[in-house]
Length: 342
View: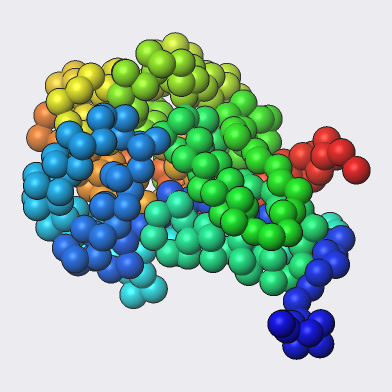
């Protein structure tokens, strides 16, 4: 039997610091079919993402989707890949670093901040291990999903809960499930649009494009649709846009099921058919630029707009590591701590 002296020396008394777990969706490790296949298998095996019966979906995923889609997606990733790697990972890390600096300047020594991906690396489990190694007394999880959906936010919550359930010494936990109408978030999105207009001029119309989800998910009570509409309306209000100055749509649909409408690609094609000379597109649901913004919108849909008779599609970048974005996230965390019972 081991003696007390022979046991591993661990931090049994927790410090007074708070761990902040910043979580984004994830990305392949490389723009190759092999890496994309591994990423997609983990992503599309999540029951929160795909609600089909497990056996049927396993057959479809492994015998059809993972045989075809990885090479196509890898080609798309190669168009946006940088020398430093995946844009989503780079921007997510920059956001995490900026948030860490904001919190350190406000409350020195009180926060440990780590980035995790729900799929791929760095994993949620490994990030929690790093926070625990620092001896944090509680962990606050911040998913980088402004609008709540069971397909994204709830999946992160489940992943965090699973990891926490394996720990011998369970820290207090708190979870920020959305910030779709938070004044600081709306102000940052509006400011990013104003800044872009000041630099590049203003288009004839502004399209606010959000990631879509299946209508079946909405029918089961998911609030995502309404939260996206609230976000778009609030941004338009802050920018003092008229009803004809902006529109909303949903992108990135896959499969044959009905997804949230109107669809972004159909909306862009229709605006091109109407002869719009310049279309500005912003994606407020994506805090970090990624495949869906840089390739799908700024490249593929820009080509669609031109083919449909439109002029120029101008993509307005995501918030990324803007100072007002990091400052808002720090405010959000501090507010959550005020509501956390002592």
